[in-house]
Length: 295
Image (cartoon, rainbow, N blue to C red; front, top):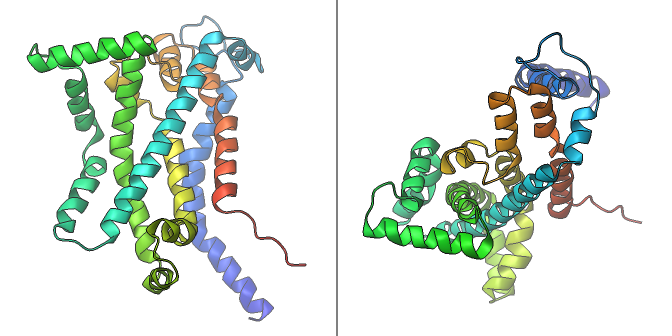
């Protein structure tokens, strides 16, 4: 291609990307920038006088706070456990749906329904299932299960298990459908050649399917981690807003909405951003390593 033609194509590409970039800057960059600036102040509607610039004082306060490190540990464990479980279940569902069988359309609908169904209604159903509001034999049984889990693992463990199960149930359906699209995008000739090379289903999966699905797996892990770290609504509704299940989102919500401390709450919500970026960088390096230069 001539240099003039390539330059024209590049200008056209930038022109076509301009609306998306403008929307991204408006919908994402401005709120994040405002939150970053607010985290450096003591902004509060309950404070008398003007807002003061405090620098990194909010961040230093949380780094020395034991409650923050407990919430950060729970948030990280929640993200890792749910992401690993969703990826395992999602891969299994994708492999199941990739093979033709009688009633596959109904199975696909059943798999896709948890993600397509409104989350607010699903949360209420799960809350009533795990914490029955009506006294019945089932509610007594679930009460014994709750006390057994909290007694064995500590107070708040049942809340952790409840939110984790809901996140896995809802997120694995999306990952399964997403990975199924990735499998369908792979030329079937490659799988036919793999069958000729090896009769072991495990070897074909590990040495053929996984390498071909690496970009899709990386994006699935990325989406799972980000949604888990930002999962405030489900945690809030399933635990009725109790801090007994300490995650960064619920602490930031209470600090901002109930205590009116917008500056510290903004700093708290941004505390895990470096850890999340580091984890995502490692994930993409694992699933999509840079190509080595040939010597």
